[in-house]
Length: 571
Image (cartoon, rainbow, N blue to C red; front, side):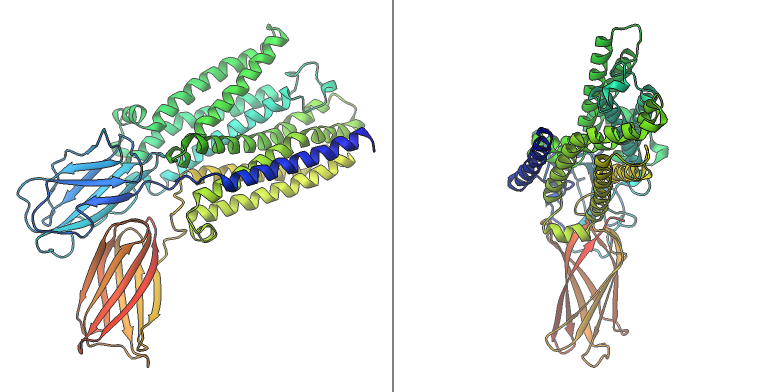
């Protein structure tokens, strides 16, 4: 057996061992909390009945809040403001949001709507009610309230994700081109020196310009997204608050500094008046700065709220770098290699192309191993338990499935290219390579979308309908529409075993309990009517999993009970 065969076999064993170790590491590492912040305790509690008016209202969250774009609004039964306007985050306990109440509040039902920005940079909000003395019926100020803040709903989230995607693409291409040059992935005989690659300079500047422009645009867009204000309320002062008081603002300023330094090192790396040594070291400086820019992206989103933040950010950073290298280096080969091989006779160009692809394989295998391992780890710790169920029932899980499917497509193309490269056959630039690049670009788009999705958010907000059978054979049907946070219509119908509608019910009571956090029990009472169909317009205060217990009392005082589980989405 020759030395080349021994080396190839050792390399295969080496990567298998490395991948196995990474997968084992993923399984033994502790999990981190990665969903958006949520309320764990409220005082007064949801639907709490108080004898006298409280002096303060306090919301306790599972993680710290950012000190910008937060608010609590309390509406009295007559629709007037019941809070004193002095809303604050406790400096000593940054997970506490509180406000005072006005004096002399009367009896009735009070609506509380709140908003804040969680540690991971995502806007969060909610609504609930409490009562002083006797409840006053339908809460005032509830109409139009929903979880999700103002402008943060609708298309803005997707526009923010788009700017992230452009940055990912630009940084990936920059990283890939620099790796292609400095790692001498193309045969050295084709280059007089590492920077002597046609098209590389133009490609670097185009990708740099795209990433920089997207980063600039991300400041006003994220300010709107996190503050939740309408476009006509946007101001320079608001953007200044984002820069000073949010983690995104601080990271954005670091990104701008990195962008300026990259411009300097790019110019130096291609300055023909400088020595080859200076130009090469300038290019290494550009490479380090690009890695630093990617690190700033790893520090945002779900890892920023992790209990073990350093571990979370590190794993996210390694995942981003592996994906960026794979996609970026393929881009460099697709764009620069044909221009480079044009210096050669036509009959050898195809062979040089596949020789280069073989040289890339060693680096590509390592990137794939790291990408798969960190991806599995991230999936296990981010998706709420049970993981397999969340994978198919949440928006985050479904997008993740799409990302995994495209990764498999890229791996299939990579295997095909590997086989062709070993045989050194085929055209110099295969269409399959372009298809692999397209799949990689879509993967980066899905990664940008995942950054702004809550792992616990249901996949859709379709109306809910469920049916349960009681012990005596009666059938209880519950409908909730549109099944989102905010206003909903609840409809209950109860039929006997023979299919006839039961019309002698005294009342129907719905008891709502949030299964993901302790928010108490919220009851909806629907009085007797002659139709046999019981409807009520009321609200769901938070997204997530809810238990709804239906309790009906007949004229003969027989109880009919059923329990339903729904998953309310953001509107």
